[in-house]
Image (cartoon, rainbow, N blue to C red; front, side):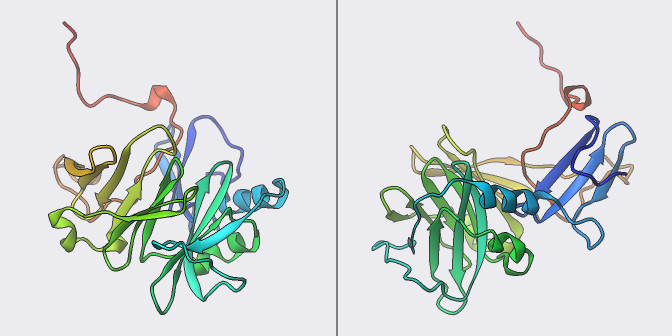
Length: 247
């Protein structure tokens, strides 16, 4: 299977871990290839680097994601980080290695951050952006929001079962705009939690069934979900799992 950026319409790329990993699926041949090994690294970080290289100069600010929005200063502390898409660019969210403090650089303007992303990517906290607010699930199992425009901080109370979660085993995601929901998924159990921003409440909505395709038992699961992300799929390859009767 080709691993070039341009390919046929029968192929979809499913990218995850902020573009560091991926799977290419050929819907006609019903085969797939991983894009996260030494021979076939995903092209996504390279595209991000090009976007940063050629984007117009933008004003930038940086601060700690705390109640005081403390300025970061000229020197970036030793950290691991996430790069999140936002407003035709990227936001840098870092976690300091010693004090476990969080900070943001809005927007990320150095292409070098994409070059070393594979080594500095952080598995120990998760973040997502909805409208102008970044939501962070920390390595200490706390959850907070930070408005990038007003620079205001707010801690959010988690649901009761959150104490049993391992941050390395969750997905945290949302739409980019025009929504009021943050989605958290435990990829080991398949449990699906939704935080409704307007209601300021958590709801356990679904339990994702992760089926083992190599088993004759249609309900036999596999160890964990690999990814929960959006991708482009040909309509002819999408088959409904149920039929709805309309009155």
